[in-house]
Length: 319
Ligand SMILES: NC(=O)c1ccc[n+]([C@@H]2O[C@H](COP(=O)([O-])OP(=O)(O)OC[C@H]3O[C@@H](n4cnc5c(N)ncnc54)[C@H](O)[C@@H]3O)[C@@H](O)[C@H]2O)c1
Image 1 (tube, rainbow, N blue to C red):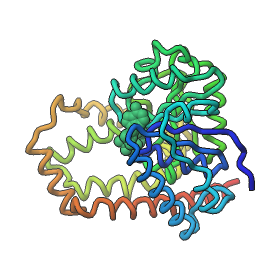
Image 2: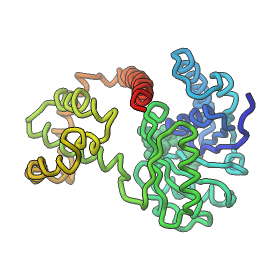
Image 3: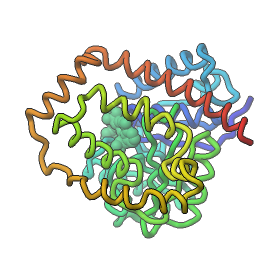
Image 4: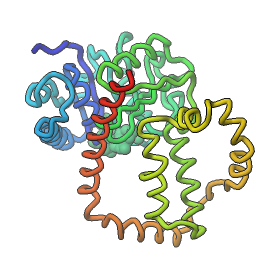
């Protein structure tokens, strides 16, 4: 099968750069990866080859091409120019440091053309923070994945105030095409949605654990065997809709309860108490020792891969 020929440039070949390379190759794009550290490119290509093989062996490979065909679409290069020139989309995946992002974007901007989508993987910086002075700033957007992107398909698409609406549309289209689930923000907001929700939860978890109300294992069960079971299939709003006779009825029934519980929430600590951090870490390490983190990550990825198959099957069932 021939590639669809459009070129995707990936800048930064760490965890997220590799994931995007695999996602785009899975959808038959030509992928070119660059990294300031040439060794990283070598490592990335070896890792991608092995991951694609593992996915194929487990029946989890995306797209219509086999692992070898997908791998053949991915090429490592040693200049940024080779990534940026004539690319349909450039996905920036450099470390989460504002100065590093600004520098990477200045370098990309100097080589950029006016028809390319310039997309950043940043988890925390709103795009206006690092695109304000760029010549091609109307082409830059944030496409924030959730880890691991191959199994958790959500992509947050966040435009800067000056991002061209056509770029927003095209980004959404291509992310859908590669099998991700884009959500489009009407304007930038700090923390986007994933991290706003994640930090709201972690804040409450911190209070419940450090006040000795629940231990680490049990608070995590509240999510993994409780709320998370539903949230794998329904969002918090549809959950409320189904838990009463619709959302209006839910608000009538539970507004007072929600208000009084929410009034008990505490603000996040300005600084995390070292002893409390160590105690949480001690309990976590008793569950998963530090030398078993990679093994546990592999297990998590397998769980998510199987869950994504179940989700697909259950979505078909609802149609
Ligand atoms: N890891 C996650 O869970 C996750 C999830 C979503 C988004 N993100 C975001 O994705 C981005 C990348 O994260 P990561 O975890 O892949 O980082 P990483 O540290 O694994 O990889 C970054 C890579 O970029 C390279 N690099 C540094 N400066 C560069 C430059 N100027 N040009 C080219 N390459 C450069 C480094 O050598 C490294 O290989 C970050 O903004 C991060 O916040 C990460």
